[in-house]
Length: 217
Image 1 (cartoon, rainbow, N blue to C red):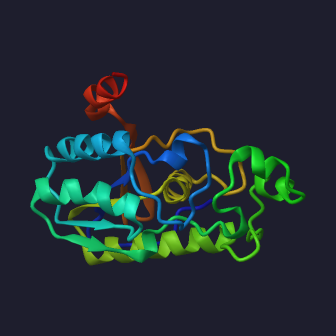
Image 2 (cartoon, rainbow, N blue to C red):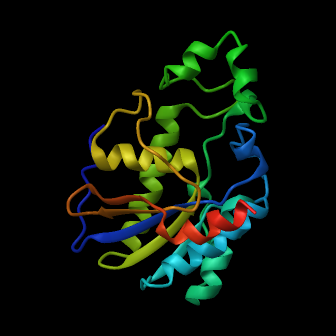
Image 3 (cartoon, helix red, strand yellow):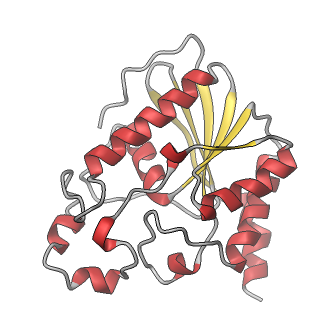
């Protein structure tokens, strides 16, 4: 996938954080736009992410309005002393009839092949197809980058959102199998408008080390 032809007077530096863990993450159940809360581990990850972000200066903080992203963002907003701004354009992909299903449930479906092949036009019945979802994410990120040209901002979102962002920034097709990690509450950095999108750093988890030790107790 080519990076969008998008130019800004000065590039915008963006940190994107996936929400903390939920019970459905642990069960490998598709959440989509169902509003699932963080679990105990997820709240620990949210506070750890906030501490990891505290070493940087941000001009603004935006979050998907789904609860798991919003609650992860709230910890950082408090520590960074920034208003928490809701951005519905950062919502997870709507997986239609697949929402709430486990991976085993999905394998038993007649349309599993279209799902596993990342068919750009497969919409899960009432959901979003991959092409439309990716366009929503690109449009949202470009709009926020343009609003904060020359600044650094932080976005709180979802695994599917980060999947699209990584592919755009590294010029990878949407249809290929994922071969990169998207950890909960990791820090992921891109630059937008220099021109296009550039990957700066990905999957930074050093701030989570103590949190991971705590969750093993």
